[in-house]
Amino acid sequence: MSVPDVAAGARPLARVHRGDLVESVHLGHVVVVGPDGAVRHAVGDPDVTVWPRSSLKPVQAVAMLGHGLDVAGADLALVCASHSGERAHLDVVRGLLAGVGLTEADLQNTPDWPLAPDAAWEWRAQGHGPASLTQNCSGKHAGMLATCRAAGWSTHDYLDPTHPLQQAVVAATVELTGAPVEHVTVDGCGAPLLSTTLVGLARAFGTVAAAARDGSAAGRVARAMATHPWHVGGTGRDVTAFMAAVPGLVAKDGADGVYAAGLPDGGAVALKVLDGSGRPRAVVLAAALALAGVDPALVAEAARTPVLGHGRPVGEVRATFGPDA
Image (cartoon, rainbow, N blue to C red; front, side, top):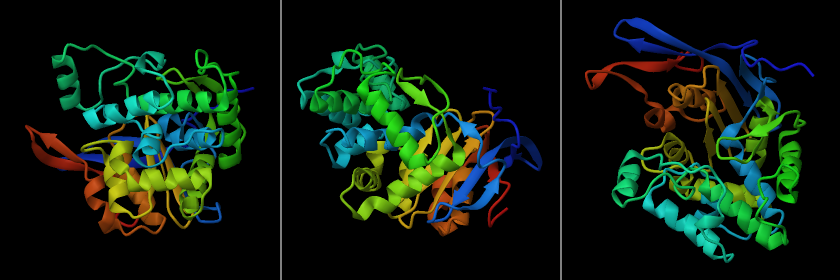
């Protein structure tokens, strides 16, 4: 099998303006699908194969709910989260584990500091070092452990790609994306990471968001994320701001320049920044959402990405496409 090259077909997505010059340009891929899943707009290659990284967490959560995980609200939002490690985030993770007779010692995700600088300073001041609890994927891992308890599966090897839990995630990913899983590796947190196509990722988010009014696993995920956006990200996080600004939006950021979002009508967007930078993601997501029918005014503040000089704005990041380009 040939190795896909994410650079093939990439196009400019955003320009970084500093003063009166364009300082940098971010390339990549964007796709916008309609409620029927058909591609409505694309920049670059909508069929590009990508690692979805943490943008796949809502799909993983759908798989967990389908195999016995019984949580809702903020608890379920944390299962879908790349949380900032703030105190309320950690409390939810501890509660998820305690509810099935486990503790943070059972987590097998990679130890790390909280994402939020203030939370990291507080954690260190308490005498702690990097921990699985404070790593941003601990909610997902707590959900995986709780699912194993509910299904009667072993917990010591829950990250093994052959484990029933991980096989269930593969099945849910194929079903929701409509694309085969052709590549598997290990994500930063230690969980198996599955490849998909960018358009497949968008379609999955459209399906999840549109299910919000029913009792399906996808609908439960959509309601939890849209109702508890702070638990999906945290204070000052753009993923939280986007969901707070757009009613019913289901959005999830991912490492290495990935973002996906679904709308209540089933329309959706997904993007991959070629160089893996997070800097242009919010601006690019806002432009894609505008093409999907979202009022640009709703997401203008969430997308604002100033370029600083001596601590003050001297420019901004601007999308190369969309209504304002």
